[in-house]
Image (cartoon, rainbow, N blue to C red; front, side, top):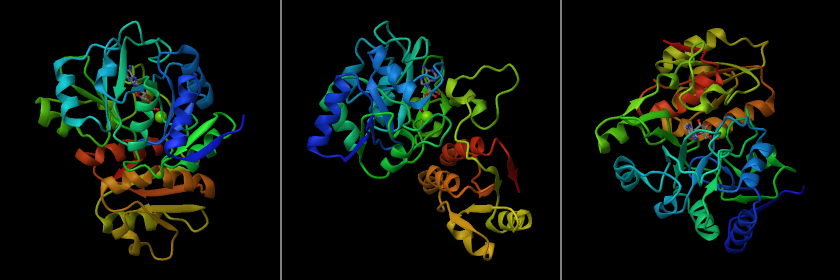
Length: 338
Ligand code: AMP
Ligand code: MG
């Protein structure tokens, strides 16, 4: 199969929407990462997403809509969900709600709940509006690779596997949406993203964070969100994440850095002068800049075939929880707090 990649425009959007309506798979930009979309209510189309990604069938997909009214008949929208949609939609917040029979089991990996989101990216919004159907879309990477934040990343992973990629430039946020479980008594963040637990609590009064967000699952512990049990965001290299002041982190990394290893450092911009002439790349200074750059850097490190990544992280709380959840998983939870 040839994979066509076109800049998003009036014509290419129409072409992409027609493919989606015909049950094909199309990659498109969102404000978080690129998505791999297909008709969420069409079993065959959804199976084609799993095949293109080589994604395990027990890892459910997020259903994307252009507007709230499209959720009618798909899931039970609770008053808490309404309040959160008022506050954060369109945007990087995915809500878990109880599904109806209209949503096929293949989309939700057999779960009774469905994840729904309304993206704010103008291209995603225009595409969803143009095709008029709910679109199931996981991140557009091959399973086990970092999520794609540019159309080139998608092409790298999906060339020959899908017919069409809409290019909308680099994604703003850079990590996937917040997944918030609304099926229990208290809203619970299963996957941290740009909308924080504090943001949610400020609107609905209460919000918890699943403990497995910053630690590996224990033996026999079931994953609250199936994505968490799969190997995720893993670079080819071994990786350690250091958390502390620029001085403490640079001292620890410089001590560990061995010139004979094919090692690289990922550091905050402000710390970069502290590493002498060792090989160092920037992760920006704020957790948001880190989120925006992390997956790009991990892909670059894979392409450079480095064997060791020594990275500077942030304290895993508040706005930094999203980027730290991905850094921790990329490092197989090898975190050093200084
Ligand atoms: P992706 O879009 O590739 O980031 O994958 C979507 C993620 O959302 C999955 O890996 C799950 O962790 C989560 N998710 C989607 N649907 C559900 C659901 N019904 N219950 C729990 N988690 C879900
Ligand atoms: Mg993914």
